[in-house]
Length: 297
Image (cartoon, rainbow, N blue to C red; front, side):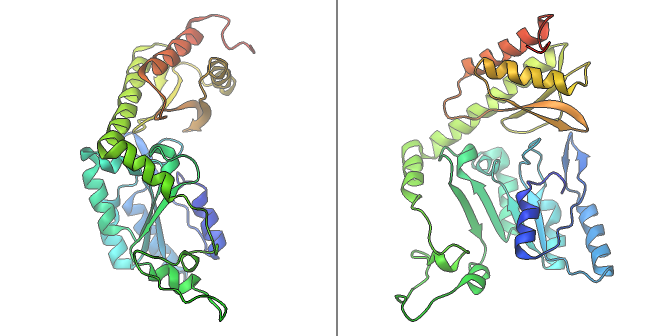
């Protein structure tokens, strides 16, 4: 959809494919891909002599944390024999929580490949991203390469020959760091970390809903809170708020949704505590109630 991360169209260009970007619909308070629109686009492409090949779904979009519902696309994927990639870079870890189990089960049924970012919401730090593929032969049939001077390889599930899985011939060792995170926190610890971020985001949304100067810009999910001024539509004003918060030690980036400026507050840092969120709200409240706030300061 037009809400997907820009890495999707970029990957299409690298692969020599033509991306078809479909405008997301506002459904249940946020923007997501409609199965009806996908089906219509497929039929139109076929009529124009094109061959639909890949369906790119996003589970937790970057701008507003919306969700393409995997279960909605099962019949389309099966009937059209599509490769279904699910980009769950941010929201994938939520599948550990019971309220997201149905979504994870649907992904398990439909997805040909899934990626989850370890750095975004899984405590593993930058440069850790997990890719699952239903059949690794889809990768090795394309990328496999060797020569007479190479030691014989034995690509099996416990000893994969990763040079035959992707373009790079080598990669850095990251497994120990990821193992240490899982070993230290355990599944209960990671679930508690995720739950804390959800609670912090709900706390902030509640404060925003009660304040006359602010409003929730869109029904974002998980740890992302999208806020804008209730009676203003000023990009400069939102930028001033962002700079005010940054001066106070809180990094929140401006963006837009529905053509209107907003501020994205992404909660879920490993060191973020409840008093941090309370301090953030204190600064937001101060900015909104001080007459000279945001006047180019």
